[in-house]
Amino acid sequence: MKAVHFGAGNIGRGFIGLLLHQSGYEVAFVDVNDALVSLLQMKRQYTVKLANEQADTFLVDQVTAINGKHLSLVARTIAEADLVTTAVGVSVLKHIAAAIAKGIELRLAGSREPLHIIACENALGGSTTLKHLVYEHLSTEDRTLADRLVAFPDAAVDRIVPLQQNEDPLLVTVEPFYEWTIDRSIVLPGHQEIGGVHYVDQLEPYIERKLFTVNTGHCCAAYHGYLKGYTTIQEAMKDPTIVAEVRGALQESGAALIQTYQFDEAAHSQYIEQILERFINPYLVDEIVRIGRSPIRKLSPQDRLVRPASLANQCGITVTHLTNAMAAALHFDYSDDPEAVELQEAIKKHGIHQTITEYTGLSGQSPLHARTAEQYQQLGQWVRHGKE
Image (cartoon, rainbow, N blue to C red; front, side, top):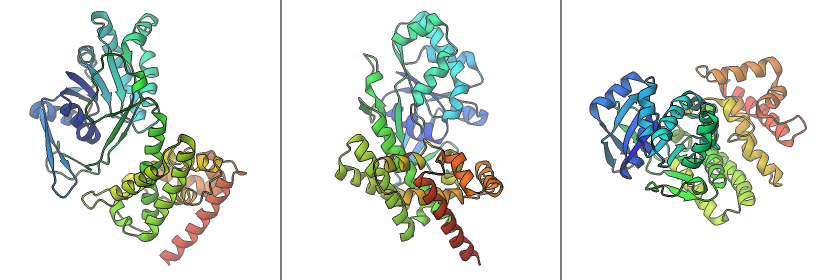
């Protein structure tokens, strides 16, 4: 079996590529990083190491790589593939859509075998988004045929891949835990399920559970840790006050998830504790500024802080820890992050209330807005006092 995977970075190699290899796929990575592509073409293998006491390693061989600039070669490879996956970031999907569309055109001209295209991105509806982008490049006739022969199942992925500090540029260190969930309802007959993947009939609950537990907790730890001067998530999670903030935020988002999707309360509590243990993992080194980067995106209405806070508020749940995390995010002034710089300039120019409304979508009448602004001021007094 052959798979084409867009994105030969750490997630692509250390997570998706590893599972595809273990399921018997020969993986062709597509990337625009010339040096990385050349190295994969030369080595045709790489190693994945687990961040655990045993430092377990796995060899991923029989791989190749294609430069994403060679659209015709990418398209021909897709035309002959059994599966296409991506891990490039949602904003990059539009840049790979034309190549995927060309591959589909070639495939439809010579084959009636079904093809599954799965976007493994950290967002809701990644594959659906990719489908819309790809279809913009297809004729009406090819769209009609693709509707029967090409499926775009949405997916949720979860694995912490920290900043890499390896001598071998192809070696990837990842945490032992992983979760890859795929919407079975979109899968076409005859698809061979990928080993290690959890197939479900309704994906949205699992996507939101992951985003509003793992991603919410991670950024809570990062923003509170940044204010206290820590450099890694692992350092921050040794601070009891930060652990209390993270656990409190996850209990608020968890209560909303349980009400909305009828998750088992005891099972979800165990899930929260499992996530907290992952953040503490001493064999991982997760830099706070890496997790905290792009605060504007993370404060947007449908993302990991505002969305669960709004959901909890609608469910009648008192929200204090999620709004405190939002307040801490508004204090994230890391000068090497363009979004952080823009956010701080907006606060200076327009004030905290207008900035909250502009970036979170929370109106001035929202209790979440008022609480975030109040906690922002409280954190500011604490920060100023700590610097004196």
